[in-house]
Image (cartoon, rainbow, N blue to C red; front, side, top):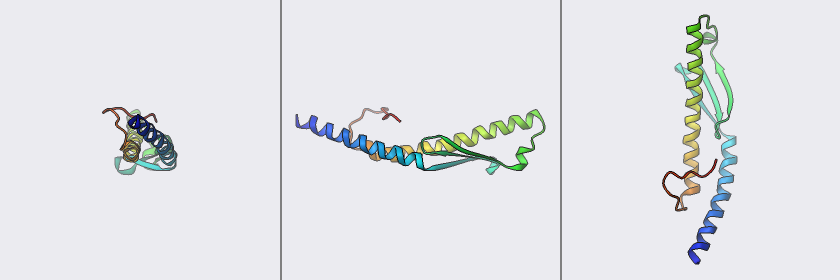
Length: 110
């Protein structure tokens, strides 16, 4: 019974830490870029897009190929920023789940 009580206590502590980490992640900004900074994207730690910056040189796309390339660069920049946000989330979540005996691959809800 003591183990069960201890596990419940740890789960409650993890839940409180999770709420704190979630709030912290919403406040941080991760920046990604493509083509050496021609396109930059910023996302919050919870992967919400905050801004997108396109260099004036890239904004003058005239042909369908130029537009397609610019669209691809936008996607790359956003994914880069989201990957950085995921890495930051994983790093911070490690402190939350470190004491809990969770099965491999089980991710706490986010």
